[in-house]
Length: 304
Image (cartoon, rainbow, N blue to C red; front, side, top):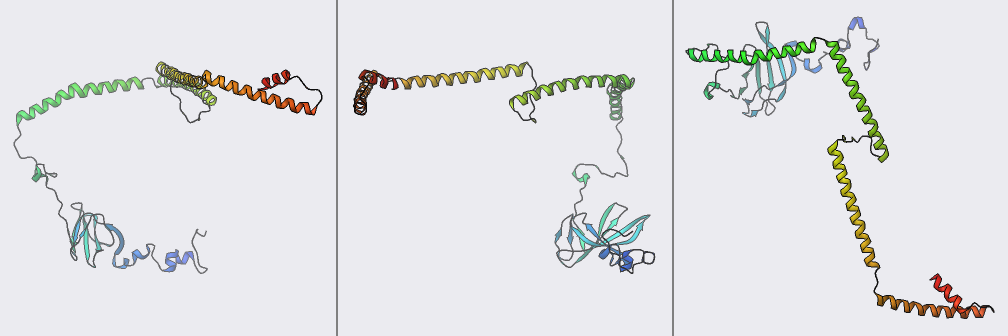
């Protein structure tokens, strides 16, 4: 079957060529295997520590990556030793770093020097990490006895009671798993019923007040109910106070002095009399039967 995204020429024979790489005369690793006949493979190598280039004397930080020539140069028992040859990116110099399986580290062979960052714990008030000689100083028998006594007391007073309590808990929970499972499922069903009723009541409240479905309502308890009542009473008092202020302001603005009312009444009466005389004159000219003056005056005053 023809593979996807691959072109097989007409003269390709699977039994004869084996693969497309052998048919085209290329290696599966591509350009990385151009020196494979010399035992060298091009690989990506990351510096394990800080170094100083021996050619340009520039500092190269730990973690810088190079396309290194990887080559096997020996064995430490059954573990191979590899040599990585890299070209400095700041100059044309080459440096070589090889593995050291005996000490589980890397070693600079040539072309550069490693930055000395070793920390000696003994010079800083510590102890040697790998102490192969052991403690040669004399042991204080009283200190050893005190340490042993403290360890025994801690074991008898703390560790043993703790282990016994853990064993009791384990036995209590594993003695009858069916009854414990039955009790847990019964408790879960009760909680589920309460949760469904609360969800139903919350949905009714949200539908009534057009609240979003994602909003979570607070739990109803005595404190929340009392706080809600206090907030409602406070808001109601504020609304009533604003309404009373508005009514008082409306009454104050509607009050007019007596002199102003009398003058306005006199002026309005004069206007009404002139209007009545004009209407009577027009009516008398248009029709022979005219209405009494008092009737016209009353109708005008009524419309006013």
